[in-house]
Image (cartoon, rainbow, N blue to C red; front, top):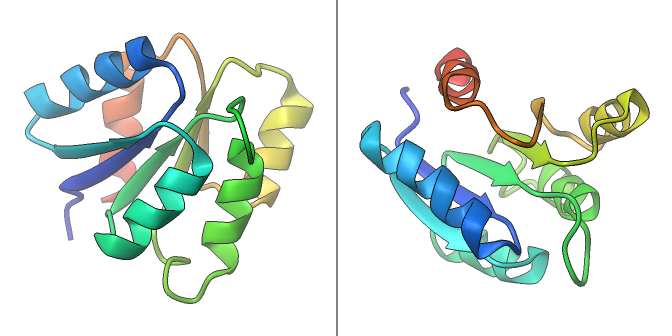
Amino acid sequence: MAIQKILIVDDSPTERYFLTDILVKNGFSVSTAENGEEALTKIKADKPQLILMDVVMPGQNGFQITRAIARDPDTQDVPVIICTSKNQETDRIWGLRQGARDYLVKPIDPQELLAKIAALG
C-alpha cells in the first residue's frame, strides 16, 4: 500500500514547515508534532503510515521515541525515517538499531527523501 499519511516529529518550526511543504506538494497528508511525547499521543490517536523523526529534541530524544514505537505492538509496523543533523556513522547505526528503517542527515534533500518514502511504499 502506498504511503499517504506522514507524521513529522521535529522541534524546529522551520524544519517542520520545510518537510511539510515538500510532502504536501507531492500529494501526502501531513501532521506534525513538536516533541516525542506529542508524537506518541498523535500516533495513538491517528496512526500515520510513516514517521519522519528528528533526534535532538526537548524531553525524550528521537532515538528513545523510535525505540518506543518499534517496541509497541500497536505501532511497530509504522516505519520511521530519522531526519537529523547528527551525521556520524555511529549515530546512523544507533538509529537503525532502535528500529528506524532509514536515516537521513539534514539538510534533507527533497529527492532523496521522496525516493526513500517510495522505497518503503
